[in-house]
Amino acid sequence: LLPGDILSLTRCVPPKKKEGEDAAVAKGATDTEDGDVVPADVLLLRGSTVVNEASLTGESVPQMKEGLSELVEGERLDMKTRHKNHVLYAGTKMLQCKGAEVISEEEASSDEDERGDASD
Image (cartoon, rainbow, N blue to C red; front, side, top):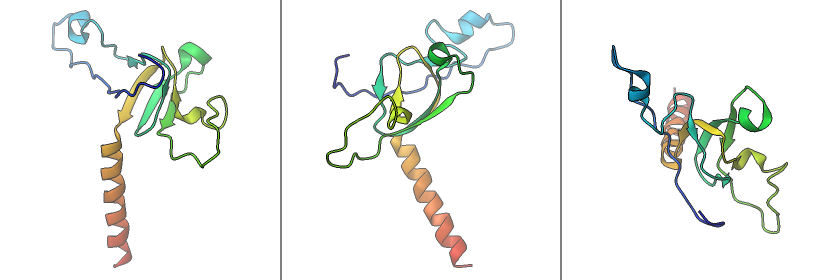
């Protein structure tokens, strides 16, 4: 990966362990039960994810990260404070993720529910 590259992150859920099967065989060589390792520092543009940053911060509570909404013209990206909710760090573990398509579908469904409730 080079700075400026765009990539798509997905969560690989390990297959369920079958009765009598060795745990190492069920998980596979690269999957872990406690999350997929983020391969590089990433600025999340779309979607959302829950990450475990314990390897960096020691904090045991997973953190919710959201895609970056549009920056206001002239606004500078500040990954240490203001925009840290949009940054995934290399070596942290991604526990859950939702792509932009899933979030858009949920928002559309929510809007339809709200309109349906208002007409009652």
